[in-house]
Image (cartoon, rainbow, N blue to C red; front, side):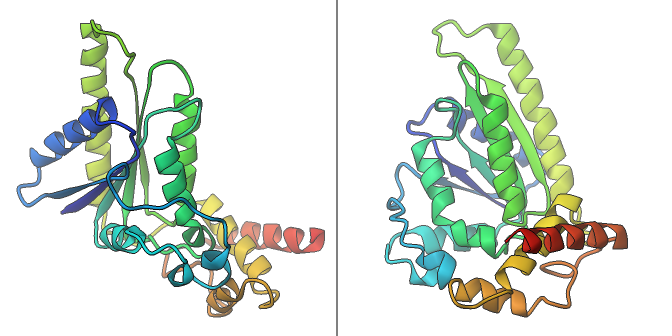
Length: 253
């Protein structure tokens, strides 16, 4: 079992400690666990310049030569991926946001169908719900098989309430157990209705013309007669609903 944890914290504090707790719970079950940390604050991940190359032509055409390709390789070789960020003003940290921006091409051309995700966030006040939803949505758009949430209150106080610590410890264990259950599911991929709609809408939009987004056009031309990005169990009703959305989008363009 291999897990890669991508940490967007701007210091090595509560969020990192919680991910380490998740690792500890997982080691109780998996003796062969490989658990690797990618600390974005320490990695060579440069700021996205908005050149559009990754979307239009492919991520290999990104002018920024840094660690992004190696991080993607680590993610693709993992069974599960943890994305962790504390709440910074009702959003993820700049490190995590930039990391997500740098993977924009995977939003257009999803490719993480073999990985399960866990999204982790900590908050001292409010904004936890919004940040968890954002990271969960991104993981879903990337194609990940499942997404487990773990959000905890970690107020910046010297005397951390023992009852809150006990509550957090219980939540860590429960979420980690759910994450491990998902990791052990080796069955046929069963996309959500939202994922099938995403597929049909993107296919309808990006297969229309090669002029502006050639990488998207070439990608979806190979999927014109498919009902999903990869081999999956997609009920007919989901396909019909999704195709309706795709047709409506084209009419509005």
